[in-house]
Length: 119
Image 1: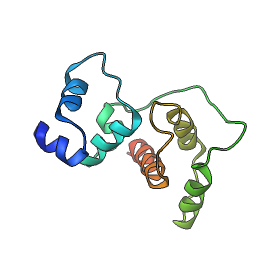
Image 2: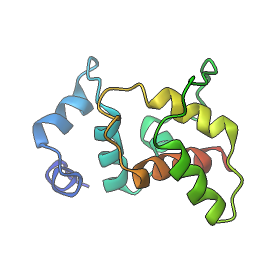
Image 3: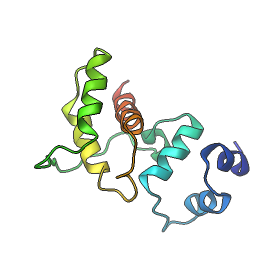
């Protein structure tokens, strides 16, 4: 896919995509990465070329607003929520610009994490 096509499909500027691609100092927000991965029809793990990420476990004192809709949606689909994947989402929630993610974006992230661990 060309840079202009990716920019159009992701809703991001060509300049931003070029900076992410070429600058070692680029630090795109989770929302930006989501848009790029979604436009390319890949998971975040694929986009970041990471097989596995290890982080310190974190459980918030008060569950974040996105957690209940996520768990309800997973159960509705007959899935048991995976605590490891939810832990990864806790870490991701602290990235710049993801406090405004919609429930379907949190679900997409959860599904992307799940897919990245399947063989």
